[in-house]
Image (cartoon, rainbow, N blue to C red; front, side, top):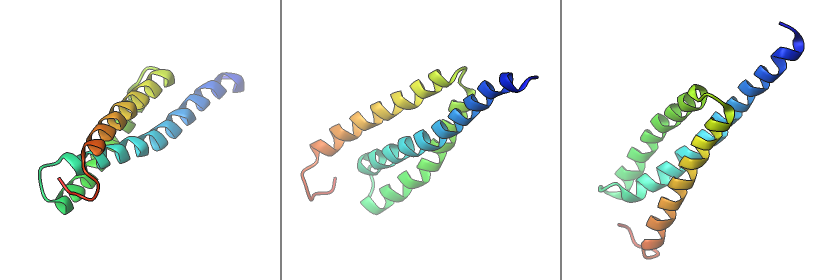
Length: 102
């Protein structure tokens, strides 16, 4: 292999690493916030459960990013999940009165 042929593959791997860490953190954070609001248990238990589940979500997203056929498809997966979770969080958080707990 020549040096020029390995540069695109190295850049693709570096892009996946950045996407998996940054995007995984963002999606796990959104999922944690959403789950802590919608889980049917006391607030402290819901936050703890959502935080523990965020580790599973992050690992699953990292696997999905590296299993995707292309970096563009991986970015679409992460972006789509972030948009869906963000919209769901916006709807749930907007429906709660300020200062009250569900």
